[in-house]
Length: 202
Image 1: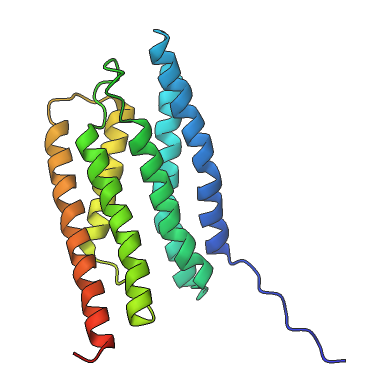
Image 2: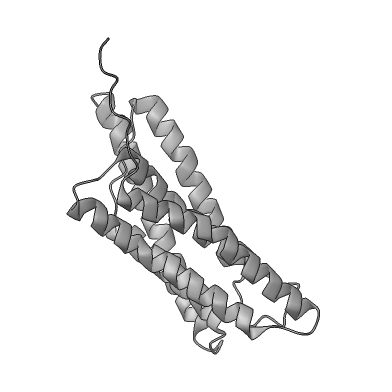
């Protein structure tokens, strides 16, 4: 009887990414309970700071799993899929939860226009990825520095709200973040269009 092929093991980098994803519901629970406290007129700042620390830990370990994958030569398809999903789940959950126009006591907070901009861009990029795969047979996403910078700025905006820093300069951070979010989206759309065109030999 032929030996069965060895089972594929989950790399250390992928384990770190999975841990990041598993801690996102904990972050969500902390923020929800903090918001409920504000609504009840008794906000618990301890919950807010725990959410701040956990968000920062999940965000910063993004660099750790990438480093481990390269240093240990364990870059995997699973890791390439899970890593961006971890960032998106974390950011979208934070942005949606901290957009509370009905709760003016949360100040500063993420404005509706900013949350809509981030969500619409991510939805369009996801749809574009599906279209490119269908038309070109495959879709290769080349990371752009503008996209990475937009992600860092979005994380900074969330941390600003969780830390409850002064609102005075917050709007300028949002404008800068919005600009790079749109710019990165347009660059990814251009890359997708080029892949489709090249696949058809035009």
